[in-house]
Image (cartoon, rainbow, N blue to C red; front, side, top):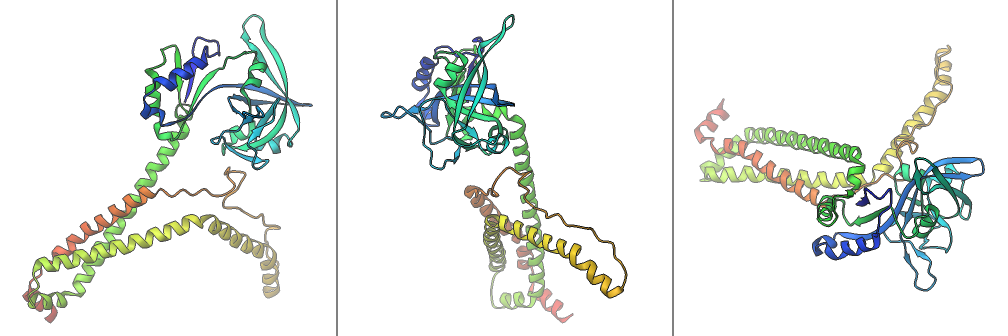
Length: 396
């Protein structure tokens, strides 16, 4: 959650006092949802290294200090450091962390230096912007999983950014990091009770509204698909139960002649439906979890099979057909290997899989319950069968 001062020309006044006020005035139930509160400077800037000039997103972030060396400690909730592995501190001086994709785009290595150009003391309409150039060194590379940030994001200590922008001890925004994205709206409402109207509060959900709307749409569509699958399975169980009853009519007649009540027949076939639903649900969950965790290997295997047949189709098949039929067959000259998970399209190293255990329990319970309810229809049909009708049906 980001808090900004609307009338401050990009500067958040007395941010340390506001930070203490937020920590003290928020209810304890809300404070438990917050990981950290920190001052931050985030602004577009210009990257320059030799003749390479590009647009970047610069973030000056407040780090805790090592009490002995005074070095900046990288927080635990910071994005994953890919290089060097195990980096926990930033050296003293103008050392920065860069997005991983900048390694490839800018051909940067650990220890390389570059320049950052930012407007000093803001932008004045008459005088324009006074540029300030800061030389920084590469301390490491991080990965957020978002290409926009990993290709243009640079993080430096807050005090270095303050000197670059000429902000002294000021910041642009106060940032609250939460434990769960589900608490965004609740904490935002609590902050509105503390800050006056001259302060603007926005969340990552507000900034990425289209992205969250797309995720919600995908979740809704997947819920509908799962519901339709459950309905189709219920229809299959009803049909299977009716077929079982029709094939077991003589057995039902024998049971009734031995004194089994209609209620007992109803219970027997309802339990049969429950059992079918339980077995199907357990096997479906086991198969689904296996396919989920092995999906990447399965897709790579399918791609390998497709590429093998593709090379055979291009390289071997023409020679075989020409040798058999004695005529030239026009075939493509080459085969380009395909990938079912192209890394230039999907920005992740491995296919991510997250198991939502509460949803699995809920769906399992609902599926078994609905199969039991669905089995009541054919079970009632079996319970209403009369012995004489069964005998007549058997004789005919």
